[in-house]
Image (cartoon, rainbow, N blue to C red):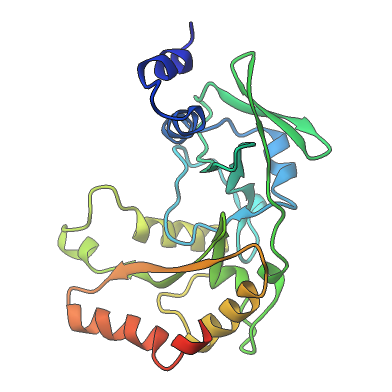
Length: 232
């Protein structure tokens, strides 16, 4: 009995796909050439907020202006989505070809995995020339945008223990990915308008870092949506 079977038996009241997702997020997945091939056409890792990888495996050769050419997520046949953190110590690996793929645990096939195609709006640009894939990203059926790519609490040693926002921004820039601290509101509105035209999306989240001055932080988020609610 492998460790996944033990987890499934231990948490038998939880759907299989959720247990598998939790274990995959915890253990990551091996970086293999097939992932780099999938990354050329699927939804890529943009490192929009956090770099979720367990190991720093990317190089500048993997990166473009807007993302790393590794898939950021996949889905199981029941529709459950999961992110794909990288870890070459992981027992999990994806194999396949011709857009038909299987998740393996060691030598055992575990589950079919489906990779959504990259949205067309990722490669479009706003009227300011900003690549839309750097303004927002799509996760499942959600459009997510980062209003602020910086958290001042790192400066005071009070950052959330789990957070890697500032290091992710720094690392993205090292790889050559465009990262600005604050988001231009017009870029956001144009990107959201383009992305929401797709039937693949149905809701929006705004996220980001923080200022020690809470009013300054609140004003930034208010400005991102003021007088635009009707457009959302």
